[in-house]
Length: 606
Ligand code: CKX
Image (cartoon, rainbow, N blue to C red; front, side, top):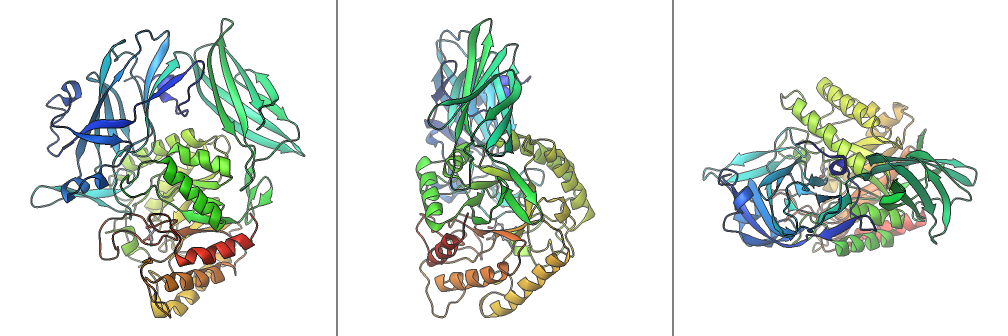
């Protein structure tokens, strides 16, 4: 299947004079396929068997009332129909799924039009040749949610005695699956704008916007830039160039300013394509122990999050996202990490508008052979991973998903860093070789050359970790006072925390450190004075202790608590209907600790 340039394009779907998008969201047909017989039985052409209705976008897990469906692992199918215009007028017809978790193949009238591995980035298919024009068309999607040690995220599949398959994630969040983001039918010009990138240079009060537009076909490119009032401030010609912006309004943390960058594609004196997007002019730099945005140090305050909500699971929902931003503004946050996968594009659009900084994370989680990362993390147990024969396939997937993430998100001003892993095994030579290859690859991809990082768990200690020198700033996930010396032992936890920080200080790395996780499971129902583990009082006590230690080290430049909200996880003796480390509950109401954090974060500047 040869991929067209337009099919490679990950530009966000937009309608304008030259492009049209039609939403295919709604109620689709759906079925499970535990025997994986759909392909053999030609469901791809003839339609899926015994379907039930299924909302798109949504995870399927929490819509049903039996375990069979919630915990389903294997193949599953979607089907819908759509009308293709009778006259395409030199247009290409593209189908674009924001994501299908974890892998999919898309069939239009029985013809395979795309295959995609990875559940958190767009699936784009050129269906121009496969559609029947002026008629209804059958669209069938095969999907699968199994995990292995060569997939991102990592895990395995267990088969019960009954033959029932269960996903066994090596990570601590529910293995939600389905069509999680919106689906669009796009009518795009055959030749036109496929991609663009912008980089920035500040000169006194002015700025230079270096742009590059990638086009399918021959034509002339014209670009222009508009301020927030809609006034044109610069214009240029050619597929690459520099736009000078006088008296620039910078995109600043929690004081966003967005310009509109407009591109046009002309052929034979006729405009055949246009595309516009909001951009924010800002620079990002790591200097010594500081994170500089527009040359000024910023201290990160916020959370690791999840895409997770009642009923819809991991699907994107504008109202939930809006509420999350309101909660984050209320508490005085300025940053979040898209733990542990790239989120729906709309999250980044909101962050651009609200001036939030984002650490954008690839779904490289569970890279440790362990029952669950958290069970073995910090125990010092050797959890070898990259020595396995699966590592070469894993690396291929890791590089590919890093490419797709950076291609999709590179122009968002909110994205100031890319995280290339969460809590892998990092103490072996094999892990060093593996991650050297990932980082080397990623460094070539970002036009803005943003900092690259990754989140290290406790086994990745200053003494044992072989990978921290790959990171432009070091992210630590630490649970002193929870997984390590929790409850009455917290005073020892505090001392051990200091000992580790002293050891990092001793290394004189001259890079910033950010805590990307710290927290305690806290049941909103539990109160006790003095606090004991799982109570709201203990969450407060733990936070106080953690902040006291973090404040003692000047190279600590950020604190992203785990987690913004309670979230669904796999069942287990350490989880009470999910992970309860939220500072907010799963339905986005503050726990007591939220007020203390608000107090702390509102006192410090952005
Ligand atoms: N970090 C010791 C990864 C997150 C988990 C978090 C937890 C772990 C802790 C590792 O995905 O949810 O256990 O709460």
